[in-house]
Amino acid sequence: MAGSAEARKLVYLVTGGCGFLGEHVVRMLLEREPRLRELRVFDLHLSPWLEELKTGPVQVTGIQGDVSEAHEVAAAVSGAHVVIHTAGLVDVFGRASPETIYKVNVQGTQNVVEACVQTGTRFLVYTSSMEVVGPNIKGHPFYRGNEDTPYEAVHEHPYPHSKAQAERLVLEANGRMVHGGLPLVTCALRPTGIYGEGHQIMRDFYHQGLRLGGRLFRAIPASVEHGRVYVGNVAWMHVLVARELEHRAALMGGQVYFCYDKSPYKSYEDFNMEFLGPCGLRLVGTRPLLPYWLLVLLATLNALLQWLLRPLLLYAPLLNPYTLVVANTTFTVSTNKAQRHFGYEPLFSWEDSRTRTILWMQGMDSSAQ
Ligand SMILES: NC(=O)C1=CN([C@@H]2O[C@H](COP(=O)(O)OP(=O)(O)OC[C@H]3O[C@@H](n4cnc5c(N)ncnc54)[C@H](O)[C@@H]3O)[C@@H](O)[C@H]2O)C=CC1
Ligand SMILES: C[C@H](CCCC(C)(C)O)[C@H]1CC[C@H]2[C@@H]3[C@H](O)CC4=CC(=O)CC[C@]4(C)[C@H]3CC[C@]12C
Image (cartoon, rainbow, N blue to C red; front, side):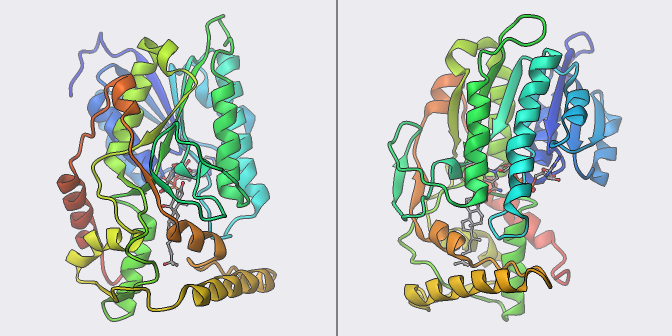
């Protein structure tokens, strides 16, 4: 979408703009935000593809920095009209220490909020997660719930705990006076499990399947539904929210929105097979091949091994007590709050989302294991 030079006046900052979701947000902004003049992409590691984006009408500025460093964040935020804060440490496998997760996810978010207040940036969109709600460690199902559905959110794992704390910081900051005397307007988006081009865990499952001779073995009952949403639609929601916060501040400020689209309700594994199947993999078993108690035992063993081996090496398998509960607990969303509040409709149909993800997977080098 082309915008005339006069209409281009806004400066956006996307933190974590080189990550899986961040890249889609960056590209979506360039395609669908005609008022954009400058797009700042802030990340710990800047990706080479940023260079290609620098030839268009929008000034794209890569900023290598760390959200947990307040002065780096303040320098990046200064002069931005809107901040989309997607940067985060996504780790449910024990790769990073809890301290590091809190430093990036909580302190980093606090730094973003304070930078907005100090420098006069009025609009802040935070990428939260379904994980701030659940699944909880008790395995309570959340079946087609919405933003108002009561649920006992109990967080013991550092990742969801940090996301919940960060989300609270962002929402509590709504209405604070920023430099210049106007109120800060914030809101949080809660994606369910995101999938699509660039999804690392999908890549991992694909390579695991290839190593196992084109097979994956069912571990989760097909009846357990897991919420999923296409990355392009999550990015589109961010773009729309960022745009509409200014016009609908009273309605949207301080609100949370689940990210949703028309992706079908399925188990985590059956959903993945929508893409892995056309890439030649097969899911073996109509029921889990191992009984649940054995998976719990294996998950516990993995956690123990991780702890024992930590001084020597990093052992971080996909299966641990937390991921087992998350994958084994129904958690699905059914809501139209985003449609009611800011006119969101998914940009990509389920068929498009599926095709795009399959094409990306088929284009991956299968030897790059
Ligand atoms: N992947 C998923 O299924 C879901 C992700 N989310 C949230 O979406 C956001 C993006 O997640 P993904 O794209 O999946 O993860 P990702 O790991 O691909 O992207 C995160 C980006 O943040 C950057 N980053 C990490 N630490 C940083 C730091 N200290 N300073 C600056 N940049 C830093 C990373 O370099 C990376 O580019 C996160 O906030 C995550 O909590 C929410 C729900 C589901
Ligand atoms: C890795 C898990 C699946 C493996 C299960 C096993 C070992 C039995 O085969 C993934 C199952 C559910 C995923 C999480 C979920 O989609 C919600 C998420 C939201 C986020 O904000 C970050 C990512 C994640 C925690 C996601 C991580 C992988 C799973 C636990």
